[in-house]
Image (tube, rainbow, N blue to C red; front, side):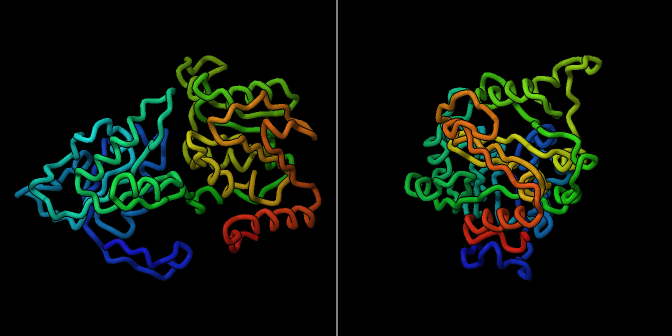
Length: 330
């Protein structure tokens, strides 16, 4: 049922067999507002398969009264992130469906003092005990996880909806990009590198769009409050900004925001911009000092030139340094 013979860049004309999938997940409406990839994965699968989620569906997904007979079950990333012991429940009675293939989207596979993320080994043991046939991880440690659990793990890098985030790309100049620097997301003592960069930006003479989750707790009448953007407005905001700040997470993971920026224009399009790419967490970093000759130990500063020909040359060179290049990017 799970094939490893199809490369990701050769699936354009491939139509998978339509399956009935039991999707095990918490009620994700609230979480999707903050971590959209929880729902994006499910939404992408639903284009090709019939999905039934017990916590959301009006029809029964299992049992004698259900007309839905699943071909396989998938544990979603939010449910999997809250596994703390190998004996954690699965969301349905596995003994009644012992032969149902089970796949897990492992999530938060790291130990981080600032976040309750469970224990990696407990999640690996849980995958084995529940009888999973395969699992996916957003980290590049898939081979290690396979060896430690006995369950084949596959690396699943984040992606982006280019139709949505590329909608406003390619518009440059003062009117199209009135903001010099932008940032949205969490910023607190939990993320010292982000705090350091944002403090520096606020001291610079630049136009900025800076919104953090802590500001959403303020009264909306307060000028310091931040009203979270809808996805379309967020994509437009990205494209309206020359520089977008995005840091790596635990284990050096490159999150969804990097790809959203890549598709929107500030980073990958041949625009006048600068990419602030911090070293992978949790390596200690000195206070960043933006400028023409920044301290290389703080962050890498790559400024694209103003001339279109030189921009394209540098952009192609960047693409050639990636694995296999970015086909069709230019």
